[in-house]
Length: 78
Image (tube, rainbow, N blue to C red):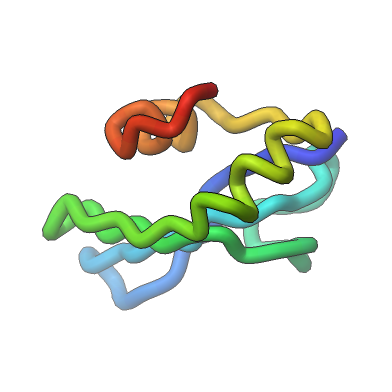
């Protein structure tokens, strides 16, 4: 099953995350199928590729709870 979830990047105490489409059995830092956004919690900043996210959701990708909250804040219907 493909999931939309966060992949951690950045320095210690300064995380940034990429929102990726990845197989649910892969580890968090594993190889992703597609990167569809960036989330920087320190500045509460998001950058999303909306058409790619909508396409993945239509094809059956399931967002994790955190990604779902990010998408709801960006007013993308989940």
